[in-house]
Length: 141
Length: 476
Picture 1 (tube, rainbow over the protein chains, first blue to last red):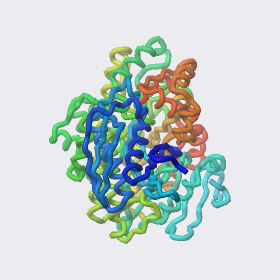
Picture 2 (picture 1 turned 120 degrees about the vertical axis):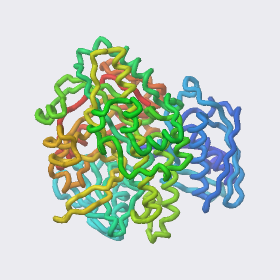
Picture 3 (picture 1 turned 45 degrees about the horizontal axis):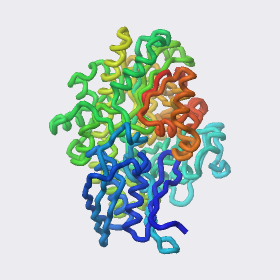
Picture 4 (picture 1 turned 90 degrees about the vertical axis):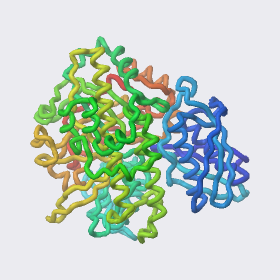
């Protein structure tokens, strides 16, 4: 039985799978975002000092997950930031969220790779038998 | 991959006979060992690609095929627009026109031995690499437009290199049919700080030396001799390409059923070539190709400046520039008939045979240089296109060794520091901002590039010209 509110990585040959688990859909999305940061660097070394708001809307939960993650990828790229704390509210097809982080510090963060985008591969947003929400996909690095 | 699911045609050619919704067979160019090493997902993806509308002849997999997005990495498929053929954002990928440019230097191994450390440091300083790095160019709106339309030609006009560089490149440095207006504002914004940067992951700038020559005549035509030093740059269209890929994958996946396309896998997201979405993607993708060509041209200029400081007698000339994530409209002969086809190469390199009109005059008798990156600890190769590659695979060959192991497994098995030290004792200098990044790219995480290249040759895709060993590697 997965613990509440966790993230993990899973196998893919060329790239990396990210998975967030939570008691709610929102929590699973937040954790998936943490998992994505962890592809780049240890989330614990990213200070959550500056907030960036993210809003998206999509036709189904899986597309919404992709939009959420790709919005974070975009903000990381254009703001030159890394994020370690996330808050998500999902209302039907709409997501309003916030990502907290700081400017990339190459020496301190030692970013391993850049995430190019979240993909449809192994994309899934579903509940397990225990009612926990699991949100996952492969990210291209 | 289970060999029993394939019909063996020769030692290096295997067939998946059409079943279910497949419109054409699958053809895998690999020997038995390489196939056994391929994930079952590769089989599934070859089969899925074979179901797409308008596909011609076969769904191909190269010797380095591995699990990709919709298409296998190392996948080739050509489509006829007149038969409802599709263009697939998944068949091009997130790094549009990722490719390799190799430069000759006029130097030999002994010329740089005494300067290796300084040269490594100079290149590491000069080449923005890794996440968080930024280029020095900030393009205005008109400059962005010009770059997306002009590619490397634009870069040369801005002072990054020479006119002569352009003929030694696919598309002569500029992809026609680019539509900058089909590239979103977000994609342009994402590219704003990234012109002239290397990126990360498996991207690199490598100083290499020629350690073996297999085809003397071809080597001569390419200007290569034993112990020559060359420089290879592996990178793509950076944030712009990634954003185009992200956006169109989504819009194509959503629109598929509207076009009557049953997607066995959403990652195969595609649209009819003759449709507004298809044309929009083609315009944007071609702009992405120009971005990659411009990027590699700027990096060429930066590499030249670094060499100038350390080894002033170096003369860096472009040998060739290839792309391995593209969809190109090309003429091919199929069953005696000439056809205009849209050829997707996903982690596969164009390999035009001798005599092709698109080749620069100096290479016309030899065939196209096919630049194959290995891993930073092993070897890379330069191959040449073969006359029969047109028949075999729409003139396509492999692009590299392909990963044998996931990034997670690699970081569990190796530490970046150890990898760097081990390679250093073998005379290979690695420069990287990230130890974990180096571990993920450890030589052992990749397949045997020698086996991949030998198979490509035996299958008639391209022939070996020279083998290169790394001396210095700047990793993203």
